[in-house]
Image 1: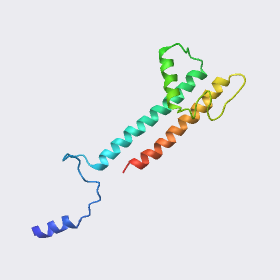
Image 2: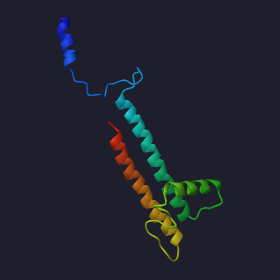
Image 3: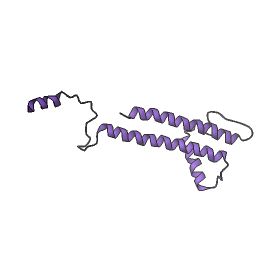
Length: 126
């Protein structure tokens, strides 16, 4: 009887998702899932900085406030100069051009971060 159960276990195919890392109980699938969660968090934080930064500009928050400075500086960092509010995808001129530039460029940037983030997470997740 013992021979039959051993044969059943040996007939099962190993798909690689049950390999343990460093002899622990963490599987490759669990590690990939955790990495995907961290990557998604980074992309969401970037999108939030851009969206809140655009909101700070649109609502004319006090630019000397340290929290507003932090958010706008973070948005400037995450816009990667592609979605810059000064020279981004689209540049508006005339009245309220700064607000329009921030809302349009940083808004598009936030959406782009979320879309690219989902694609990257799908590639990482098992």
